[in-house]
Image 1: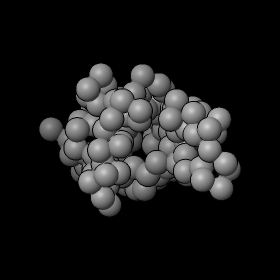
Image 2 (image 1 turned 180 degrees about the vertical axis):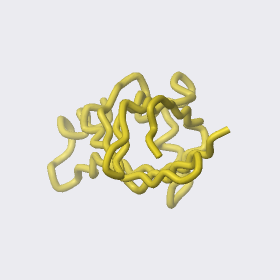
Image 3 (image 1 turned 120 degrees about the vertical axis):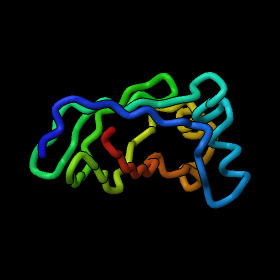
Length: 117
């Protein structure tokens, strides 16, 4: 099976985290700003050798993505992948104001399951 054209829209209000404090931080204007950017999209540009590629549009920025994927009978299971979001203003401010040992990991993990309709 080959993916030739597809996109995925994600409701950013469904973000979950290990704590309510972290979830609130991720939803806030200093990170994903879900009030202004309620959804993110992933637009596929290709699928080959078990890898999907495309563009993630998230919080007003775009990121090139490659992720492992299994395609079976119209369903796509995209394995865990990370997006380096070091260009987000939060991380830029952190680098300017905090010592390096207090910097957060700029890689955010994603997983997706897509069912064809």
